[in-house]
Image 1 (cartoon, rainbow, N blue to C red):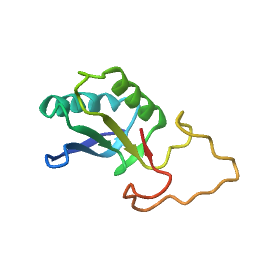
Image 2: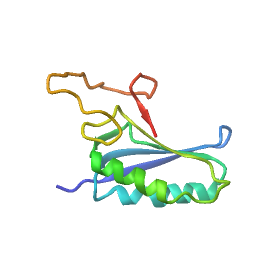
Image 3: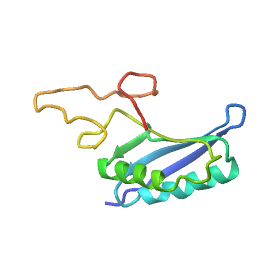
Image 4: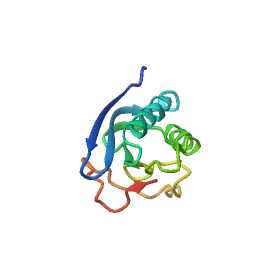
Length: 123
């Protein structure tokens, strides 16, 4: 099965923020497509913060998310560049970012997630 990503770039000049709104499936194989887009956003608007918004993704593999974060951490860019944030739904099971739920734990998966609910992740 082919997993693909779709990215919409939203530039907010007044707030100094560039949003990369990602839909589709983030996997271990296709995570590599996002760091160059972050680099382009930082080149166009060096002082802007960049938000990689994965809240609209249909599927996020924990390995792909970890590799994406690692890739972005390795490419810090110039010191004057704004920060890069990766925003996801609550931490996926098995990710190094959060504790593993117990076998008996049952949590509801939100139908829509706006990023304002508790338990969201911004790294």
